[in-house]
Length: 264
Image 1 (spheres, rainbow, N blue to C red):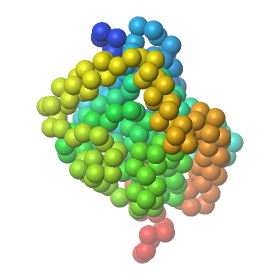
Image 2 (image 1 turned 135 degrees about the vertical axis):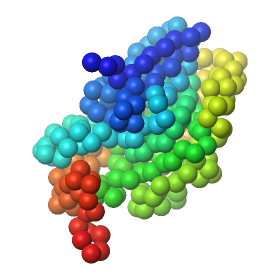
Image 3 (image 1 turned 60 degrees about the vertical axis):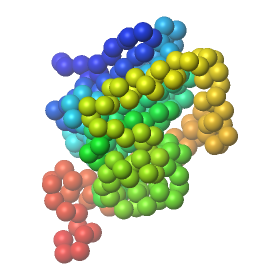
């Protein structure tokens, strides 16, 4: 079985790369579990001072895997809630990692892929990448990732993107602060290295405290995140088993328009 992650360490920097390029690094239950564990282990490893998160191939992450979605579409509300809590734990683990994190956005990102970007301290992306929070097209909402996306881009931009599910380009991602920097694909590795160079000049304890400070002032604590995760997991579970959610998932998996679109 091919590893769903590639992990490399170099001079105290750990790079975790999503390794499912044949499905555009889409999430399934295995990837979620392994990525959560890998990030948690990074936090506990005293030899690692920074984390870079990237994707193999031409896509950062397409979000949810179709086969995983198919399985959850037929699951109970309770099972969907537990599934959502596992994804929530991944996002929370990344967001509160007490070490600098960089999203090395090597290509397009959708749904949960955008959540990973929003949870990182620094996000550097490539020209030509596309982004979308497409859940509403499926009769769903980006519930689990919403606290981090709203914190990154602000509620005004988030409301528009949540309800429209529109695709936006890398320039727009930069404008709304989902990305901090935009470079040509050939310059991505150098741009990440430059960011790591500046991060390496700072005290590790100060960085951990500064990160927690910024989050706390924004009203984001681990305790508040855990409470929101419970509420948001219940919300997405309820929507997945609703008539609209079931129709949206069925339409997506069947590669047809949902019935709520005029004329269907």
